[in-house]
Length: 129
Image (cartoon, rainbow, N blue to C red; front, side):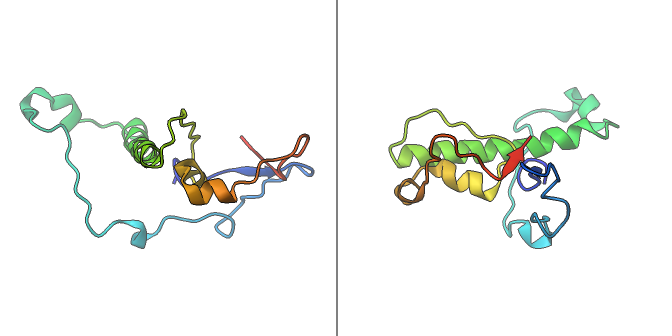
């Protein structure tokens, strides 16, 4: 959620939050989990040397940093997709990596045809912080 779906947007004119509840953003559900989910942690490492990780009682940081791995996996996939499309520019991906940001960052021929560049002085209705 934090790194992929929960984008906070405020209306530029009124200053009110536009993404206040579940009606304005996608809440992750049980069907968002892939059917095949293969992961490995610390391959070829003996656990007896990592007792602090095994017995960690941390509450905030471990889940936060594990969730950030999803963001960086998305970034790596986007880099590969851009190389396949012949795009060698630097990828600038901001968190949260929403569906819209991911699609635009692919920079494939379809996105390039549909991309609308704002005219001078044009601003979005929303402000993202």
